[in-house]
Length: 460
Image (cartoon, rainbow, N blue to C red; front, side, top):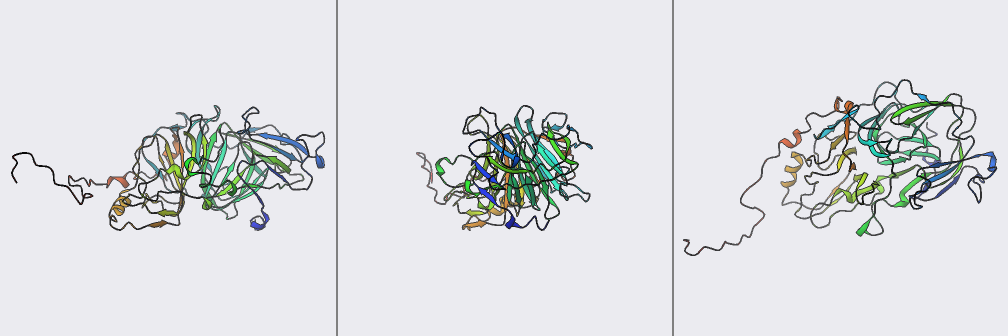
């Protein structure tokens, strides 16, 4: 493990949506064509398609992998034993419920029994169906053991991984990624990958989208620069394992169920590859946030890192939004997030630090869900402390914090086990109960009130 975690061993390629090329052995990439009669070094050519063949060229995603043995070389898939009973990819009344109440969960304990990434992954909520290629799921994971002699493949959708505690060492068919808390990784649909834990334990969040891919949001009037810069996204470089590997197991998530197949080699046997369909990582500290510089509070969409759009302009299947360190300078403005009812549904997590709208109870590794049109906003302590500083609102900087939000136009159903979890905070609503009325018919903001015009005949 020590050898694996040396940063100097890893090399990345920079860019988002680029057509990359990488080879672990010089000359392993074929010249002039994708599928020659005989590939260099006797490799097999294999394409992985993330979009349909006839998708518009600007949206088409695919890569060519040149591997020692093709991925088709495995025994038939069989239902995994024991079955994983807490993964969902088609949300209905049999596995989830609707609930408009504000929900919050405390951090899930990392188990004492040996648990790898696959066994520690469980669904919190979601909507839609992987079978219909439209929808999303939000999962969490807790793990204390690396995956051994096995790889995971998600045939249902793309994973966006957000580690909160403990680094992830991710081996993929395109190479290796080291992902620390404060970074994210995206594993596109269909890629085989394995997760090891350099720090022994890990906990985090996972967003999954069906039938779409993440892209950078349009910048509109912001201009050509800002938010997440394409150059800061990092794709792996080719790296491979060779030789016999008896009883290697491929774990495939298909329709929310897990299946396993045996093979005699590592799936990470890709000596070279090229294309634009590739796993990648991003450091959230490199995000360039925007904020109001005079008055009022901007909408959280201004801090969107990645978006998975729907066919309706401006409406997201899933947005990934962050609340990073930044200066707060607005004058005569309630600076924490405003009270809100939203046609979108908001799932929030906290990677580290404290969230500006919740003074208590929202902990790193915890989560909250405010569904479509469910009221939410700052808790009582935050509100009262903020308005008490009405005459002392100097510029201030939020530091040491990183919260995030998965936001979707779809209305999520919440899994039974999430609603029955011992980590569900049944007293969450209490954080708003203390909000009192400050209403007064005398507007204290008006210091220079003009006298009203008297009616004729009125006395002094």
